[in-house]
Length: 410
Image 1 (tube, rainbow, N blue to C red):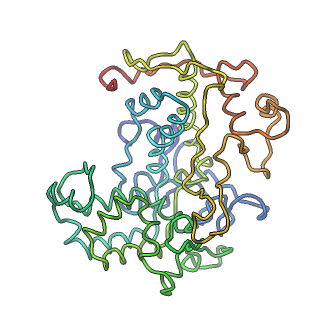
Image 2: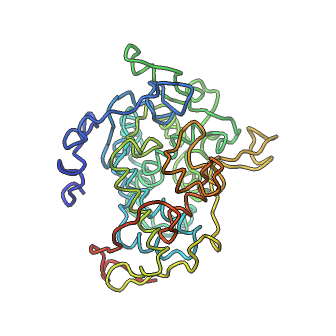
Image 3: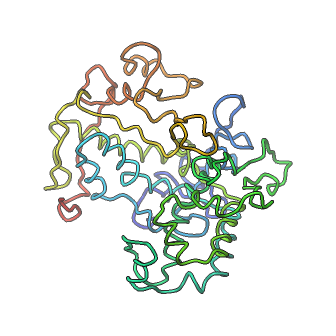
C-alpha cells in the first residue's frame, strides 16, 4: 500500500512513525489531538483527550498505526476496490446501502489506518508461542465441517492461526469495546466489565492507567462469561471450542481482557480528528449521490448499475440497526428495561444536544425549522436533486481507475 499510493507521502497526508505512531511528514505533521476542556461535555478518555472511553492513548498528537492490529497485519480487512464500490452502487434499496457502505464500502480503511498497539502485542506473541502446536495444525475439509464451520474459505494450513488472525485480531477493536459494553454480550449481562481510571496525567505511570477487566484478574468472572463478547458469531464459537481446549480459550480471553490497548484515531469514534477521515467518507457520499442521480448509470466502461427510481425519499425506508439495542426482557443485566442505542434511527439527531450546528446547516438541512436536524433530514438534504438542500454537489462521477476487468457483473 505504501509503495503504490501517494496517500501516505509528504505532499498528501504524510507518513507516520512506526514507533511513536505520530504523523511525521507533510502538512499535518505534529497535528494535535483535541482535548476536552469541559469534562461534563462529550466523551473523553482518562487523559481528557476526545477519544473513546476505552482508548487510553495518552499522546497529545494524532495517532496512526498503519496495517497493524496488535502485532498482526489484518490481511482479511481488504482495502475496498472497484468491485466493492460497484456492489454498494448496485444496492436495490437504502437499507442495503446502509449495510454495505460501512462494511464493504470503507470500514477496512479505518482498521488499516488506525491500528492497535500496547501490551496486547506481547500478549499476542506469548499466546501464539504457547499454543503454536495447535494453531499451526492442518485440518481437512471434513474436519473443518465437523468442527462447525460450514463456509470456510481460508485454506487448510495452520487453520487455528488463520482463525485467530481473522476472527480475533482482525476484529480486536470490536472485541475490546464489547468488554466495555458487556451488558450486550456477557452471559450474566453485567455492564462495563472493562474499566478505566477516572483520570490520569503525566505524573501517573502508564501502568496505572490501563483499561482492563479487573474482574478477570480477581477471579470474579471467567472466560465462559465473556466468551460471547470475544466471538459474537455462534459458528465461530462452535469452531473455536471444537478445535481449542478450554485452557487455551481461557488464556486467550485473559490476554484479551487484561492487556493494555491503544488505538489510532481512525479505528474508533475519534476518527474525524485524522485528516484521512475527510478523504475516506466523502467517497461514500459520492457513491450515494451517484446512486440518486438519473444521469449516472455506469461505473467503469460497461458496469451498469440501477438508480433508485424516487429521489425525494418517499419510497425509501431507513434501516435502524445496532448490535447494542435490546428489547424488554432480552438482557439479563437489565431485565426490567429495554435499551435503544440512540443515533441509529431516522428520527434521531445527527449531533448530540451538547454540540451546535453552523447557521448554514440550519438553513439548508433543518427542513421543518424545529432546531433539530435528524438523520432523515440530513439524508434528504444530501440529495443532489434537492435544490433546497445542501449547497454543494460533486463535480463529476467518473471512475477512471475502474474498468470492465475490475468489476464482475452479478
